[in-house]
Length: 66
Image (tube, rainbow, N blue to C red; front, top):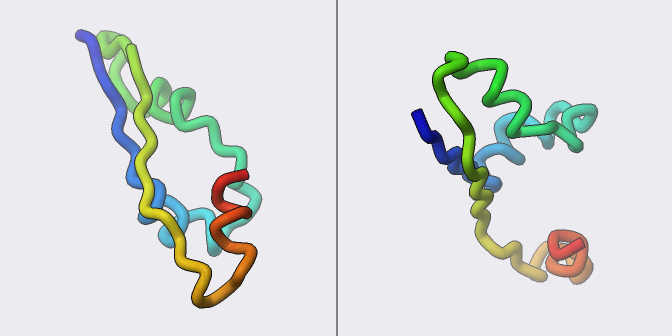
């Protein structure tokens, strides 16, 4: 079964990465391969996020782009 993974980067950050920075380089595709049944063939991983504002930190938009 062909499977596409969609990641909400904003929620991923605030629910996992902000509290547990050791997961900063989490391999999302590998995680999904281990969670899904073998019949799922991951053909694409799409990552979406909102742009951060420079109101809190002037460097924030640059840091996000990196």
